[in-house]
Image 1 (cartoon, rainbow, N blue to C red):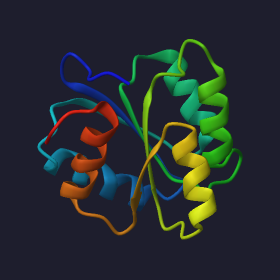
Image 2 (image 1 turned 180 degrees about the horizontal axis):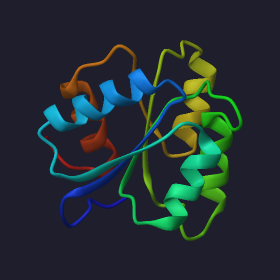
Image 3 (image 1 turned 90 degrees about the vertical axis):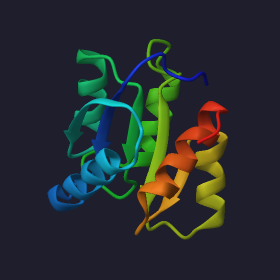
Length: 131
């Protein structure tokens, strides 16, 4: 994964509207250069959003109806046009095996609750830069 050239187009994916808003606010406080933050309520909506406009970074919950985060991530990586999109899973997931599966698919991981600093650190880890 390479660092995006300019301000980030971000997509927050979570079935809980309040959590989406909290993640979006955390992104705004993170110090990352942000152009726009869009939201989706499940993996299916997220794929539609990705196909309708450029996105640099997806902040992804796992447990959602319609399409869960892990299924979304697998479909994203199978799509040649979208496979290089940066993804950070933001979840309460505690299964080490599942987290390793997500990392094997190229996703970063931040535990909820999280700080903007933890989010920034994981984004920088994924793109190979320093905060």
